[in-house]
Image 1 (cartoon, helix red, strand yellow):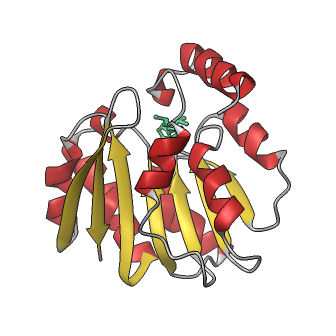
Image 2 (image 1 turned 90 degrees about the vertical axis):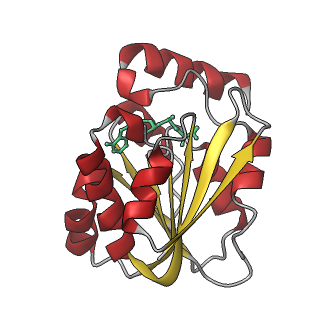
Length: 185
Ligand SMILES: C[S@@+](CC[C@H](N)C(=O)[O-])C[C@H]1O[C@@H](n2cnc3c(N)ncnc32)[C@H](O)[C@@H]1O
């Protein structure tokens, strides 16, 4: 990721502790985490906590022209950055992932093939984590996958309380390395 984007991320982290990381996810880790997506057909994806777009950029560069990506981000600096891309496939909403069901209903967003999240789940008590996860599960098509990447593995137990199938993996090419979960509805 180019220097200006890393600098924007670091500055935003110092102003907003909810950013929860000093740098965006590395391009190598993004590619590894997204390796399960099949970009050859149209996809409908929900992204929670896109930051300044490490995953968003990767997804848009591979998704078909008729795919859709809804990004839910709390921080106004990041929302402005993503909106400046003017990609018709991307809708950016400044709100909390905790309001996901209402956001999707208000937009008539269709059932999603996948969701991906970098929000700092460990900042929330367990029942609020699972509240977000349940909203994601309801937003997915049957068989849809929720990919969660975190520095801490604590989120795995909560995902298992909500999703019938959860696979854990470790992605090393990031500082610090990431715990990644693929939770299938
Ligand atoms: C660790 S950063 C990940 C950023 C980006 N996805 C990446 O991988 O580089 C977490 C992001 O989640 C956002 N965030 C934190 N809590 C959130 C919430 N409740 N709803 C939506 N976004 C949230 C933060 O503002 C930040 O952009």
